[in-house]
Image 1 (cartoon, helix red, strand yellow):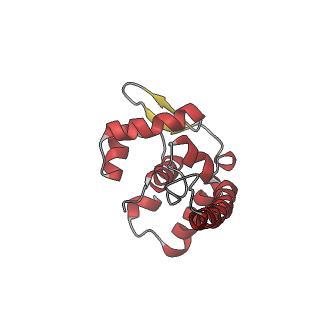
Image 2 (tube, helix red, strand yellow; image 1 turned 180 degrees about the vertical axis):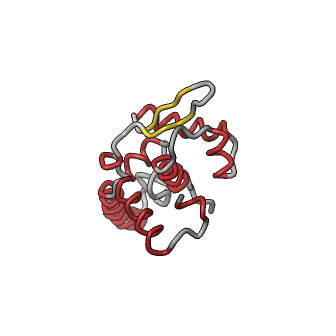
Image 3 (cartoon, one colour; image 1 turned 90 degrees about the vertical axis):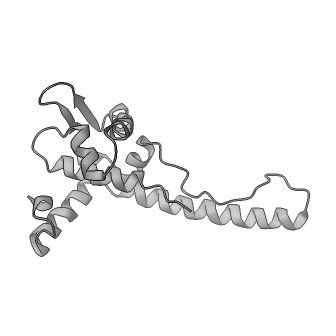
Length: 151
């Protein structure tokens, strides 16, 4: 099963943008992620609609952070990029006639609902600013694994 990496890739981009002087073009972001600039623009459009980034066209233009990193959570970013449901597992029939299947579905749905609530709460409690501080601390203590990353 293929995983959806939009959240982690978008967080990666946002942290680079937060530490980059000036706008970053869709082309530069695309090269960094190994994807097409059109995919970058599509993803960034959701962030722009949410007010987390802004874009400028033309020479010297590109994407910049438009929100306070303390005010944006990982959950906010997940929602802005149109992330998938947290869990894709579940029953294939909502109202089965079989009593065994009813009991199984209820148990699975309750468990998934509890797990999703915990994950959503945790994603909502971590801000982009916290990630940026962790990144900065890692660069100070470990030094860059890639000199351009911590510069």
